[in-house]
Image 1 (cartoon, rainbow, N blue to C red):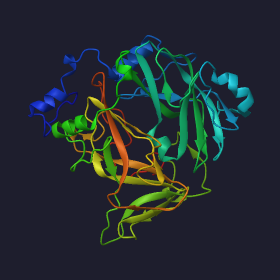
Image 2 (image 1 turned 180 degrees about the vertical axis):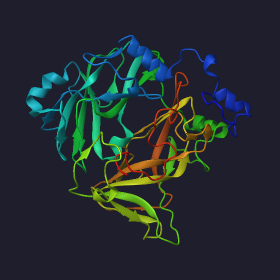
Image 3 (image 1 turned 90 degrees about the vertical axis):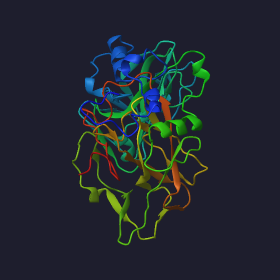
Image 4 (image 1 turned 120 degrees about the vertical axis):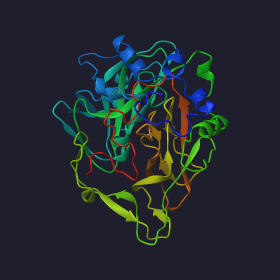
Length: 395
């Protein structure tokens, strides 16, 4: 464990804890998600690099790398994938509407699609691949982003041996946003796999999840595990009205993505109180911020990711910013847990959510090593120990 000056957690006297959390010196190079120190090594070796601008140390998170927008954006007619053997640039001529200069800042409008070359590039070896996700603050602003690489036939994935540029597709949904060169909207995870392991399942099985929870509690209640750790929505009815969520306002103002704490909640969000005795009717095509009933912990040797939209759970989408870093929910060295904030968009029909209803799935995967610094430690992490919380832009 990397915690210092702390009391042992509840489980550290259990030998199963030590088996799941060996000291860093016992961990040699392994497969799994690369931690911060491995990302810095890749940057030093120019396997992750930026042509004209050095990568800022603050971009390196416990198990991911923040990516920065380049100096221009292309407004395009529609989303696209280049397909195998084709570059993104080769398809841009037919897709772009006009070029937007981001060097001094520019507004990206709602219901429009933009493509932005990122400042970072990759030169991956055969054992490394990458996945991407929006940053937490991006998802909570209802800004839809996806990573694209040359030759890609899938979003948010970069295959082994890839060498070349990266692009981000951006589509603001509820609020227009002000961005500039260097703004950070999405993040990248690097995965180390051998050729054989590349064909194996990436995430822990349900049996492995239950064993991990037994050794180191992942939630503060009895877990529900089915194709991952299931999360339930918190709409707990109380005798007095209780704030249970937020609903994005239509036709609100522009949000500067780099302006932390600069906006009043009431100008952009309607507060939702429990008036339906533990129920909430989701209106079609509206965007909501809700919270999980469970307080979640991601142990130091694991990373987690919210699963994509699951149509078996209902007529809504819960997946805009899916990465959970190692150490999430570990406060002052103790696994106390933190709520998972749920970014929810209803689909074509009204849908009733009820308190305790399963609304998302959290998938856990192993790290190749324990990060030198965990989430919330010396990083100024915005969402450690969170409950129901909007993005960092609101005060």
